[in-house]
Image 1 (cartoon, one colour):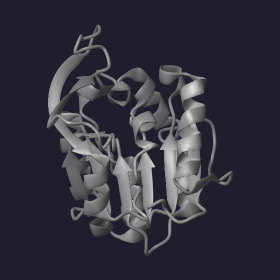
Image 2 (spheres, one colour):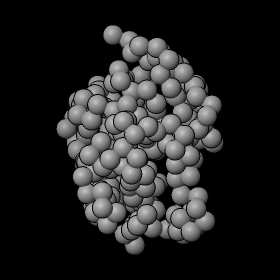
Image 3 (cartoon, rainbow, N blue to C red):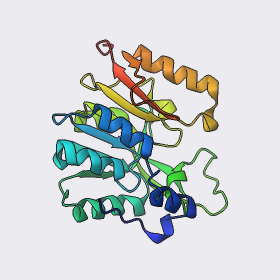
Length: 223
């Protein structure tokens, strides 16, 4: 796979992870375990497009939608899709938000190491070495309606906490979610898992590893 990352979005940790084969390793293993050729994939927090491009090779680029908030990484995903002859990949710029979010835009904090970038939670105050950008706020409900996913993958740096209690697309059978309890605490992680259970999902041990949790639909989605 050809994976180009803008120099200004790299740091030594990302470079080492790529060089050693650690980059998105747990997400990739979970995806390979559960993805089927007839799936439709929604990838939230696409980064450089690594997970989305792997999915596209299995299900076809036209059946993968990837969302990325960082303007530079949004462009990188599109470029990487073309370089890998997967130009039909659906790439959307913006930050996913809960359905209750009322504004059309949201402040996103971009760091030189792109995988630390996230929705700004500090009242719009910039931290050292970061910059603040305004990006479209994309409701989870609308993204699901647009892509009709059977598989959802997400690495959204803590924003997963607000999505677990939302309504999930009834055809979604697998969720691959990187969680960030270092940002919101173990009590909130417990609530996130309970919310996923309430939405008809169960914990799937095969593919779960480290901070990457896999949920499988066990029951029909609540009405």
